[in-house]
Length: 324
Image 1 (cartoon, one colour):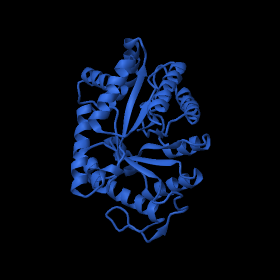
Image 2: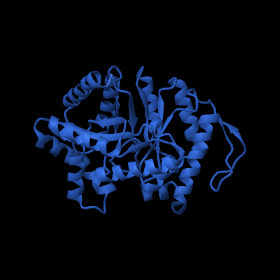
Image 3: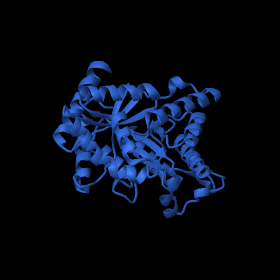
């Protein structure tokens, strides 16, 4: 099992944008010296629930500040970007970092973003799949020549070609059953979301296994990733109070049709929030539910920076003790 971090970069009454960016940079440089495998940065637009609209730009900056850790996008929204541009940037980062870049990508989850970027919402699944095919061709062969419903142009060379054979590592965020089934057919590993319930994650994992088996995908070669929020405090109520404040606006934006209090408590209960034993128990349960082999942790809901570092050190000690 491998461990990494992810950054949401929320801003709120306790965290301004400058502080969020500075902490991301400081923590990235700190964990580069530890035993973590990777860091992934979330993409978000038009709200305070994430201030990074260009995760590949941030990835390039952080790669330049580090020496060994892999860094990339958590959910680069390929549906609202030109696929050739994504491929060019991904290959360039792969070259500059000598293989340390990771391309985590996603379909678009917000209708207003599809409208803003003038993308056809009624054809969203087809557009998502076509964008991926173009990107994948470019990353694996160095060329693309699409003849689809949305993109059609002569064969081009995507420069520079990727440093890594077959391109940088690719993961797709599990945003729907459609995406999960599509990914299973292609053998693309998933990133399970921190705000989906354990039951949803378990159902996604089951569906992925069934489709992958049907299409002859070797599941032994698939390493899914799981996002977990961490707020460790022996004062359990303090940890839960901080996490409630951190995620409340996000829940209102992304889960408007669910009961707010129920969703809030579900997320807190099913992520690593509370005292040490509560954190360990919650993490073990969700790992068992979805079978992920790689774990991504966010410590951002902890207001005190020193406490974040202390929690990171505890995880790092456990990595050395049990996973190396």
